[in-house]
Length: 186
Length: 179
Image (cartoon, rainbow over all chains, first blue to last red; front, top):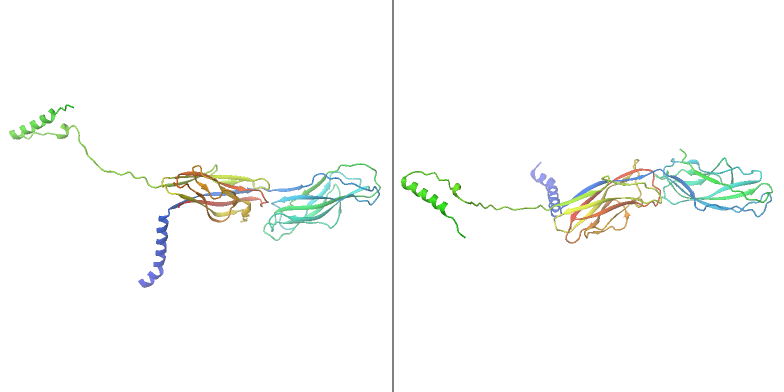
């Protein structure tokens, strides 16, 4: 290879390296570095945003339905199983009602994602009102998401609750606890 | 002030007598002199220096726990010692973005950083938390005299949203430059 070709090939490179060195000397600088860490522990939470509620009957006759109470649950999880999780949200009541007299029912109204668009989401297991007992009832499934963050949930699940009389009921008041559980499915 | 010159005369006399007598009289002038001086020039040079020290409890930054509704933060103290007497600026580079064990990146809005003003007149260019994004940005300007200074770089997980569980690791570089 001739000198001219060598110079053509390497000369420009040396020129720019030299120029870079020259300017780096004019404006001296130095650096130091450090590691940056963040730790996100596993979380799995479901919390109502409404508090205790009262279901009232205007009529005591069979077939009467109480008022409908809408409850919004804030759902958060960051370590769910990927893909579909059946019965991710379950509802049950603390004690069996007199099933021959009153039935307690729930219906998922919808789910609103408040996190990243590629987070997972919830969808109702059954359409319409379904009976809730002390044995538990699947309320919502985790749908199979398409995003990379399908294992995360951050949203609001809206559920309608009501009671229905199966027999004419005597006047009175009953306190019941309603338990709604989010399970990661794994 | 009276000066006793007798020793010098004594030496001179002995030397002259020695010459006259043709004798070699060993005379050691140093032994006879009362002082002697040598002069040598010297210089003192203090090299222009700039030291950038990063001080934190564990040597690194650890923001934990990153959970919703509970902001968490950690800070790195940046200590600048310099004798250059020239204004300088401090640059911040997210060299490696935060990544989880499966390579998952953290949303820039879920991790913020800010810089405080300096203790000796330097001013922050990022006084309020901003998303930690890749790239290089000026975070601090020294006072006009370019005095030594120190300030805090604070990293915050504001807890606005859910972050997939795991430990995220990244790397930051802090650089100084004369203005």
